[in-house]
Image (cartoon, rainbow, N blue to C red; front, side, top):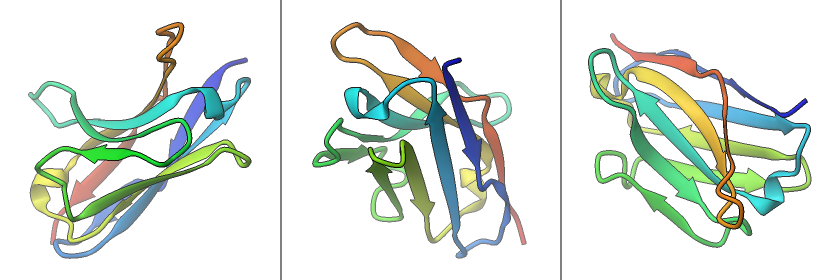
Length: 118
């Protein structure tokens, strides 16, 4: 069964940090571009960060650039999002996505809630 499961969400304080993890089962992540998206209440889902299949290329939304990092471990079949210098506007449900640039198949996780508040 193909599955992406996120973890690590919760309550963070402004200026603090959280680390999200996404673990894949039923398929190998190494063939997929991995991304984190987020969706705040009343807003559209937005792309936060992307990492290439080999992990050598990353890209970030301007709103998180310099604060968030994305990394992957193709042996452990995981991708992480390190979120530093948290802001209240980072509050959202965060989703992990796997995208094949060859077949265009996409897989999504169920999401994990991140709330940034003092």
